[in-house]
Amino acid sequence: PGTGDPTAPPDLPERSYSASPRDISENAAGFIAQYGDVIELWGYSLIAEINPTAPSSAVLNVSTRGRTGPGEDRMIAGIVVANGPPKNVLIRVVGPTLANFGVANVLADPKLEVFVGSAKVEENDDWQTSARAAEINALTTLRPSDPREPAILVALFPGAYTIQVSGAGNSSGICLIEVYDLDPR
Image (cartoon, rainbow, N blue to C red; front, side, top):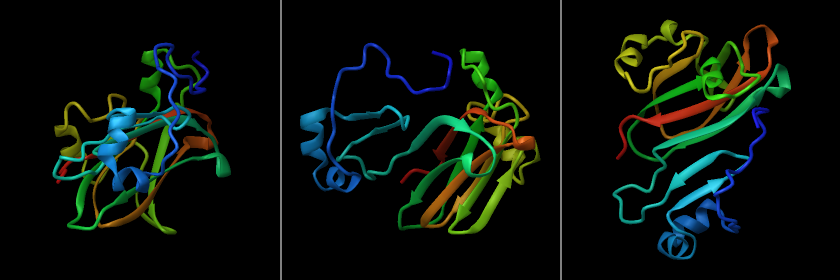
């Protein structure tokens, strides 16, 4: 506990899934009937709710926690925006605030970069310097609580994106990447 290593809570039932996201989307009702409507992948820290009757089967919010370091040890996450109009997405990184929840060895000053392929879409070091800081500030429940934590509010066109997190001064530590779809369809 407190090391940043993912461990399942003691009350989590033992379940084993053998399905790809494509398999699940092709037969969501069957998957739900067998496993329930919440998927918990420990080690990846992804929690997704599946609802085949909803107008969209898109995951609305995703988060992942892990250790990041300099260079090749930076933390990387990916998101895909489905076909359709651009989506307003808030991407933030929680580092120092994790200490308030008993997490040790947090990343004291995270830096956030978003890429499509090898092209950088946007980057941020401290959320208050973000291009859309006023709009982020208006999102009172989503804005970072520590000024050292980065956040980006951006309209993403359909495609695959890579989120990379590193620490200022090549520092290392535990952080949490969060992605919020602000206009779910």
